Image (tube, rainbow, N blue to C red; front, side, top):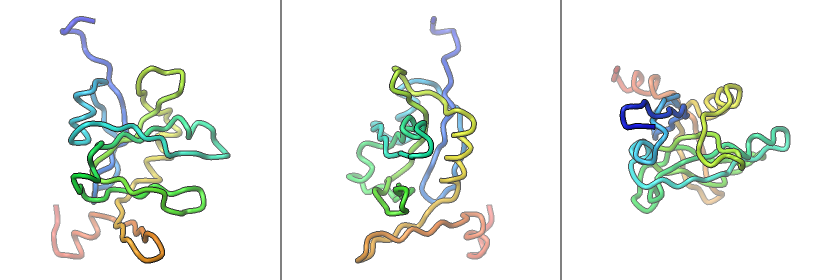
Length: 150
C-alpha cells in the first residue's frame, strides 16, 4: 500500500461520557484509535456469554490512563447477573478481535446492533456502600428538562 492508497477503515461503536452511543468509521491505525480515546489505548476483553461465544471476541478499547487522569465515568461493565465489574473512565470504543486476527475488526452487523443497543444511553454511575448504582439517561431529554436545547 502506498501513501496515496486509501487506508482501511474500521467501523466501531464509540461511547463517550454523557453521550449516546454512535457508530463511527475510523482509519485502521494506532493514531486514529488514540485520537478517539484521547490518549494511549488499552484493549480490554470483559465480555462473556454462555449463549454466544462470539462475545469473547468483542474488545473494549479505552484510554490506558482514563482512571488515573480522573476522566469522567462513561459506562459500567456488568456481568450476566447485573453486578458491576468495572467502570470505564473517558471515551472508549467497541470492536471485534477474534483470536486468529492480528488486528481489530469491525463487528459483525448483528453483534454491532446488539452492543449499540446495550450501551446506547449514557449512564450516571454512583458509588454506594453496597457497590455501584447505575442509572441510564437520555441526554436529549435531560437537556430539555433543564431548559437547554441543542
